[in-house]
Amino acid sequence: MKSAYQIIRKPVITEKGLGIKETQNTLVFQVAPKATKTEIKEAVQAIFKVKVVSVRTANYPGKERRRGKFTGYRPDWKKAYVRLKSGEKMPEYAQNL
Image (cartoon, rainbow, N blue to C red; front, top):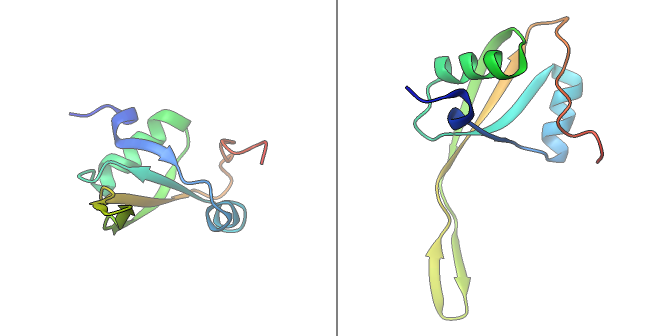
């Protein structure tokens, strides 16, 4: 079984992600591609000590990138939208933006 820190890779800090965090009580993370919704829920509850209501996930294929005549692909990745129970304190991971 993977640890919580292997499942939750990093927060997705974008304008859309921060807007959802403030308005819909939802956190956005990049997670391990093979992680299930249940594993993501348990990992967030363990790391941040909050109650999770629901988890939605989205898979993103890697894009083709070029450096001159050489081509390659970025790796595929998975994003998770984690909705917290109302009344829970939001963890602050993007304070100084």
